[in-house]
Image (cartoon, rainbow, N blue to C red; front, side, top):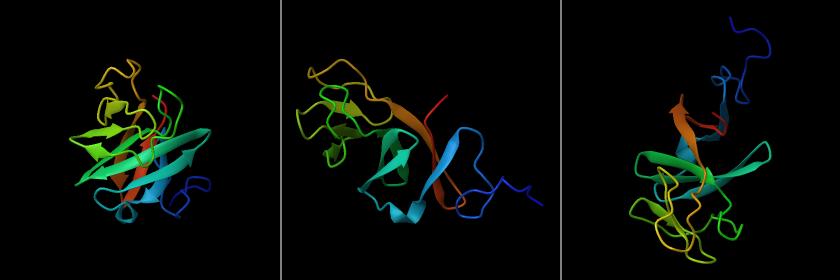
Length: 119
């Protein structure tokens, strides 16, 4: 039996420490993007095949949204100024900025996408 207060928003057991349940995995199609709010952070989920990435939805170059940016070759490009970032590491891939894009740990558990924004 699961103690009260240990259930997640879907009625399933609460995620492990640090991970937040954010979206049903089947709600994010291949090639799609989806913004979720975790505390005070806007997090952009991007799916490429079976791989789901979670990055900050704010470009570190000019503080513009990353959502809607073109995804190609495992990278996302900020639509505003063209800064490109590796979706796995957050590393800047061109000279627009040297500041990396924050990336977050992500996993799929029981058909739900979970993201850890700390640790």
